[in-house]
Image (cartoon, rainbow, N blue to C red; front, side, top):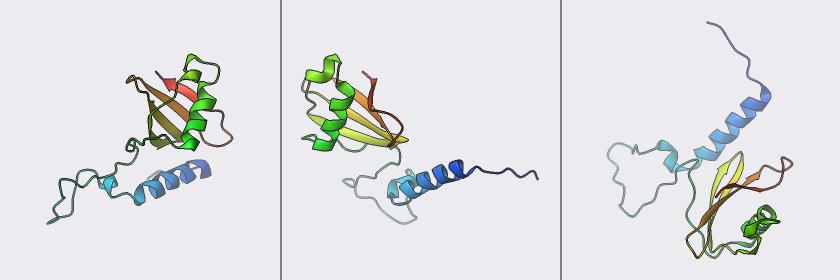
Length: 119
């Protein structure tokens, strides 16, 4: 069998993904332990999925939005709720009172500025 070397960067990234998912029961997918019953009201977090909507929008998320929207038509808008997704950085879904949803990507520190990634 041929062996391959794994670069330290790839190994570190894999370890981060594993560590992030290890704490969530939702990483098991839809499988449940034999004999267990899930309450219908119980919500299972899914790794890589967007979280619940948060309203009002926290100050730190508003700062990310302001940095991304600066100089655009969105700079004058105020989001009413936000949902986040951890990727190689963070995706923020900002929702507005008129139903419009805007996605802003904030890269990891030192990797650039937040930017509008989906309209």
